Length: 259
Image 1 (tube, one colour):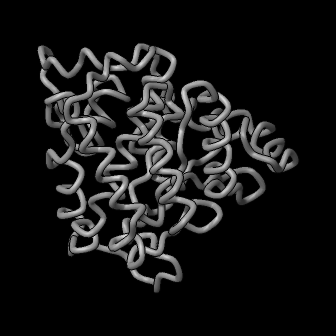
Image 2 (cartoon, rainbow, N blue to C red):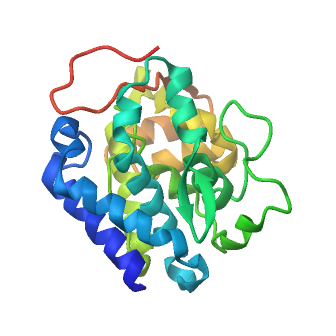
């Protein structure tokens, strides 16, 4: 790690330890907003305004950009708290808010432009960056579909907040993916129905289509007997996709979704 990306990772870890539950799934945003930890996050992101991302070594590039994304979400949480509709939530991710190496990035630019290989986000026809966008030079060389379980979007259906290290990325990605699958996937009707997070419907192509999605989740489930019921059906399985809850993932949050 360089000094800048190490400091970013450390500040993100400090914010998680101080304000999130043990799983990183829910946050005390009221405390976070006025906290020293959020101020430190903002300072670390400000330090990246003149930082050349090419200084990050290849094995650590993906971890760097994931941490940038997650830090940007936490820093700007007050804006997300004011979102009154799903459209305003989406706009939060589409509005340029990060300046890295002298260039502006929306959160979507980081997630879909750099980390997903400049592919369109769900509901969009075009990729976030043009083909000749100079920011594409910072795209990590290796793409990993498990990236979807690393991005924390501060909502109830989001994967928990984690802090990533390029030297441990494969293990961390697998842990994040397995944890999300085991919390979110259910096998019902004697193996005839598999209930899957909607996130995997939106980005099924990243996993090789529905068959790839099914294989991805089945290999990570803990209940071997239930998985065996699915396997015995030899593909005669219905996938059901659970609703995605965009409500802010507050600690002790009351029921109810943004709509």
